[in-house]
Length: 155
Image (cartoon, rainbow, N blue to C red; front, side, top):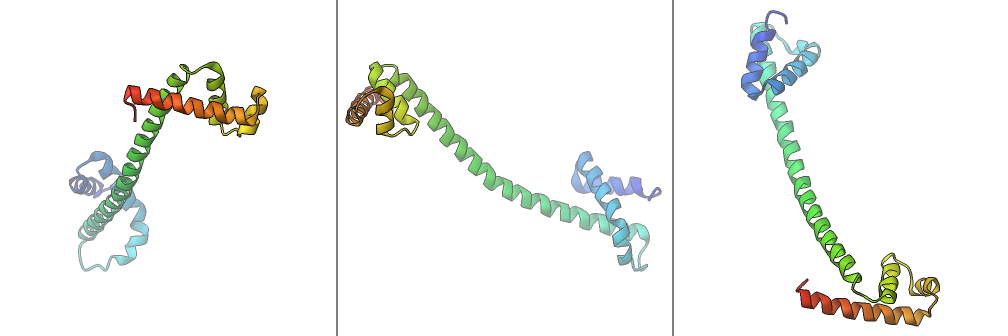
């Protein structure tokens, strides 16, 4: 290996086009050589056989990288869509937070409680009002917010 390592590295560099990739490929080849020695049939020079091992290893590496790239593409699309949905949700929540400041205090308080998945009965208990009052306040808050959204042209 000491005599052929530099030539092996140069071949790996030409196969990969990157010093980092060539170093990784050489390391993989050297680590796999003990198990590959039984495939050497003495019909060719050792360097010829070693170059064949290197070419095969480079092909395997390219296939693995292509497979990983295809898998990453799917995840990349998913992540882009997820971020778009998150951004849209943040925009809506930002708008809602701003719009809630324009509501009368009792409507804002009622809406804030029910946005945290509190039932009308629970919100009524916290606010000291009847469950029906909570329902009316929510309907009123929705009516005002819908009107505000329409005025601002928000979808």
